[in-house]
Length: 330
Image 1 (tube, helix red, strand yellow):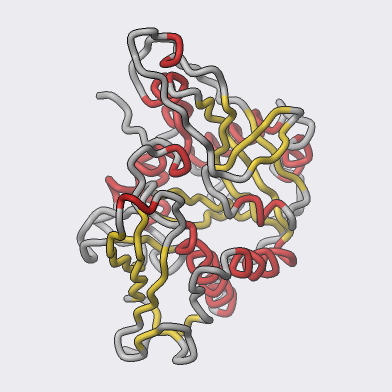
Image 2 (cartoon, one colour; image 1 turned 45 degrees about the horizontal axis):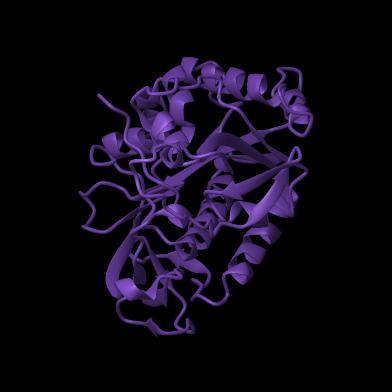
C-alpha cells in the first residue's frame, strides 16, 4: 500500500481560510476567556492563511483523551507521517499501544465526535520506565543514531546512555494539515498540567528534560519544473525560515521555532532511508514538489518547558488562546 502523504500546510495549493471552533470536551475553561461561550466551553478563532479567495470554512474541533479502540489506527497513520520513511524502522502498533495505555496523558483533536479518527495527537513517553520494551529500545537506538550525525544533536546521545541520571520524556505529536497552529499551545498546556497531576499521584513522570520529535524541510529543485509538458507552479513557502547547518530550513510545525528559543540543543537530521527517484510513496512525492523532508529533535530542560509553552501562546496571540484548564466535574 502506498504511504499516505500530506503536503506542508504552507505549500498546500488549496488551503482554505478557516474559522476554528475549539470545543473542549475533556476540560472546562475559565469564564474570562475571550469570545468564549461559558456554558458550552467553546472558543472561536480564525486560523492563519493568506488566501482569502477560498472563503471561510467553519470547523469545530474537539479535544479528547487517547482512547481504545477508536484511536489505534489513527495513531499509526499519524506516527507514519511523523517518522516518514523511517517509520518502517519501528513497530508503530506497539507505540500506539503505549500511548493508549496512558489515557490520562496527552490529547487528540477530532472533528466528528469521540469515535472518529484523530486529526492530531500529542503524548509523552517515559523512556526510562519503558526502556526494556523492544519498541522503546528501537526508538532510543534510532534517536541515538541520528543524534550522532549532527554536532548540534550529539549531546542528546549522552542523555540516552544507560548510566545517565537524566530522566527523558519523549514528546510525540503530529497533525493533519487542516489543524491550525492556534490549536497546539492548548495541547502543550494540557500535557504539562496532566504531567503535574500524574506526579502528584506518585506516577513516574518527573523528568529532567523533554525531547520533542518533529520534522522540517529544505527547499530543493522540483522535478515537476523539469517536465516541460507541465505548467510550472510557483509556490511560496509561508513557514518561518531558519538556518540549519548553513542551509535554508522551514518548519512543518511553526511552534517548534518557539520551543527552540528555550532549548539546550536542537537540529535536523537526514532520514536513514531515502526513496529512489521515481519510487512511489510520500518521500518521492514530496521531493517531486521540491521538498526534502528531514527529522528534527528539540531538547528542553524541564525547568524551562513551562516558559516555552507560555511564549508559544504569546507568539500566536493574534489568535484566541485557551486559558488554564481545570478538570471537568463528573
